[in-house]
Length: 371
Image (cartoon, rainbow, N blue to C red; front, side, top):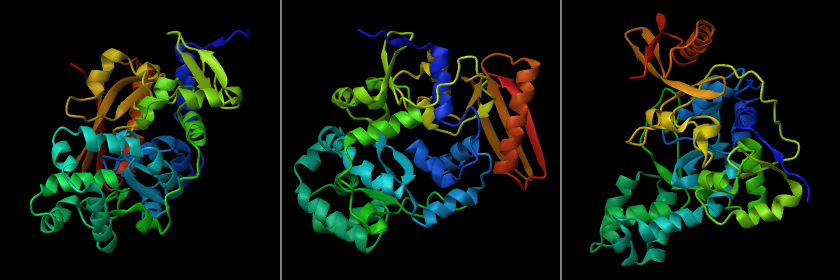
């Protein structure tokens, strides 16, 4: 039996950062990066802008906003039942694949499951589609329409069922830089004028995941998408993949020709987006963040702060503020950085301010220790 190559935790981290374009910024376009990353966390509507800024050599907010307005990129509930920004083609392929997550929520949602189980679910789905395709609206605005149709049912529960049953996109101006708007929804098919793509096999989607997040275990892939029973898919793909054993003994799969830099490769300072996907794409997140630091970046109310990467690891987080012509970045670090490291972090923070608040009269960067 052939010996399986071992991979150190540091080498695993460097490989992941290379896939994520966090070792070196890419000269490519925003559209190319969205496609490669196979899903940008977008429950915070502006998070994708910061994720792209961290990964592209040249990026302006209009580059991503125009993709949304041209319907080349959409924002919708996908992996793990959370909002992601993906290309139109990927949305059509991914949404049917993750439907079991939505079906499970229909059955197990503690707040609404009893009311949903008692409803005529197919009729709710048909009615919701008809209303939202005719007039896109928020889920709150949909509730009175549902109450008129089913006066003996809880409209909040029925609206929740519509969210699970239909592939809904949140349309602009929601998600546009410098704009604001409620999450107005319509169906993906109506917005794109195309049917869901049910022809793409799960194997192709797993390969896309590995291209952006590999090397990875089966558990990593399942944590990324929120689905289970992916071991069969990995086994079917095994002849096409390279296998490694991680420091913890777990079996890692990867594309044969994907970048795997030397463990000694320098990793520059980076500031990640809020909810950055590199922090959420694996079951074992220790490749980029220590377990005892995760509770400092992942808050109890579900917020994931914009983390700072130093030497390929999360070393703190930032807080960005702007008021009365002044924009600032506060860098909170877990340990006091060395002089050279602090200078690199300050340069990256200044770059962030030039991107996010170019019109501010003054830019300020300061360091604090995490207490």
